[in-house]
Length: 342
Image 1 (cartoon, one colour):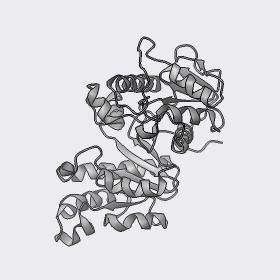
Image 2: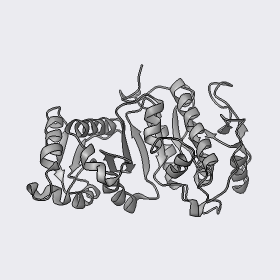
Image 3: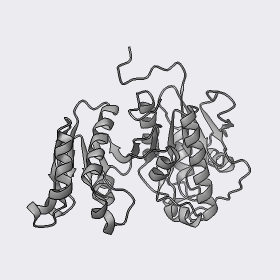
Image 4: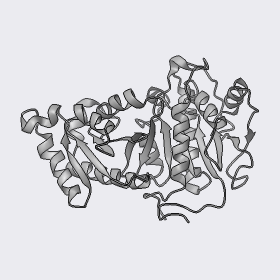
């Protein structure tokens, strides 16, 4: 019998994979992940330019996937299909180049995939990398995937979690200049991030929910000798979350906490800014790291790498992280999303 956190389903799961910026490695890793070993009972829908998908399939010596659209049937009849939500658009793949047309196409595919997931036509979406520079060129005024998905789903509270096996990190701030980080931290915002991390650990099936909260400054402020954000902002947030029953340690120095995570001392770390978490995470988990967006009413994962323009079109892209993102999306689609709305 299913547990309290599991969802009973009588049909295959449908996972949509957007191609991302087609001038990067997105199409290569997406198509490889679709055709390689998938979780049992999963249908994969590749979302984007059909010509690009067919070329990648042929390069892998795989049959070109059939076309499908969410309004045709509730579940694709084939294991791998193509959905082109912008049939009138024309975008030419130029590997290695950052262009406005490719970025605009990537944006449109994300919008369509998100809408399909909200309607229930897709059980989860996995997004291949986009270029933030490309978004600027295409006049798409969002700093990244996470913020765009929050906007499309009318989500106010959301966070980024990066995970690989038992290594999990969440960001208190995301795609912002480092000079603005301290001014964006608030006790309420950090407390909310802590609580969402705890909810995510339960969603992921963690038996324990031990969370370490990083300090902002070197040595976590060293008692106020190197900055006072730990005392004014982070400490009060930790105390407020503890009163709600969350198991916490912190503020802890960021230069040592990740070694403790690797030794099994914590189940997740809340970092104060992007590179504080991503630098150690990518050092140990680059090939299999996955990005999970917390707070959305839909399930969204992505590989933990960028467009890698320098590798695009050469057939050398490693699909491992994309494959892990598909596996995680399928696993979570079989469980109750704590942020799903009625």
